[in-house]
Length: 400
Image (tube, rainbow, N blue to C red; front, side, top):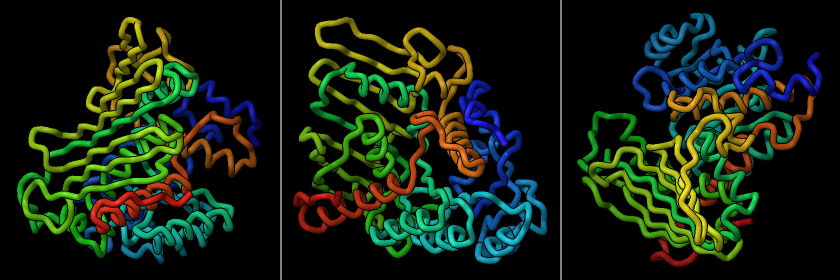
């Protein structure tokens, strides 16, 4: 069995510490799904996993075709996740974790099924559609002794980890205000009724009480929390329809009171023409500010009061802190972007799950990834925003 030293990551984040890759299953994400390829490429690039089983669709024919696309053996390809969980739990070489990327309303039942079968779970966000379901999953994972992770990939960009470490070290002083925006344009025109990946995002029965707020607003909120270490104590939400005719909000303006008393604002929209994936973060303290733009992810802009501006570029050395350098794999000039962030996410989850299976306690801060508590916080945030919007944009306190 490996010892603690084997988990120092001296070989890099993408080397399996157990000397083998972990066995992973997938539910959802098959042919025609938007997010499936993002997960798949991140999984493969991480070097930590083999995808060996799947229920990639509830349609048997599509599930079989998708499994063939992914080189999953026919006897481990299913259209019913319950059969998959039962079958894999009974195998000596069964899956050790499952990734679930299905519509929001199905997350709870699927995750519960695999946790009860003794299989670790990796869930797409938002973790569930209700606070009670999210809390129940966290409790179930703890009771089963299993791990529960949530896929917020943006915090696995090296320069986000750099920003987090700099802020924690006091580089910009006490945080005084935070602004986050996540701006897209795909909902500017009326929704295509034949596009299933869009349709479920507009159906309250499947997506929950919010559309854009749960879809990309939870990303923005988790990014704010990860970088600053702060949470929202209260939120005030305005929901709007700014694009084509839809059943739910495509734009939201969210004001936050952070737990240190500072104000923050999150603007999310999928109806801003000419914007593609504009996730941007600005954090200002009493000594300076830090800015990051997901469309230019290798650059971190730093301003300090009465000092020259600084751009830190992803790479080794030249201002990169160890926490960020660990997530860096190529020299400067050789671009790393979202695929690498997904790979870092699956690497860090994989290393943590490998350590747990080997009975090894990882050194504090060696890897970090969104867990069930982060997933629960995202669901509570989403529903607090819905509470506020439904109450005429009143301030709503978030549960501790």
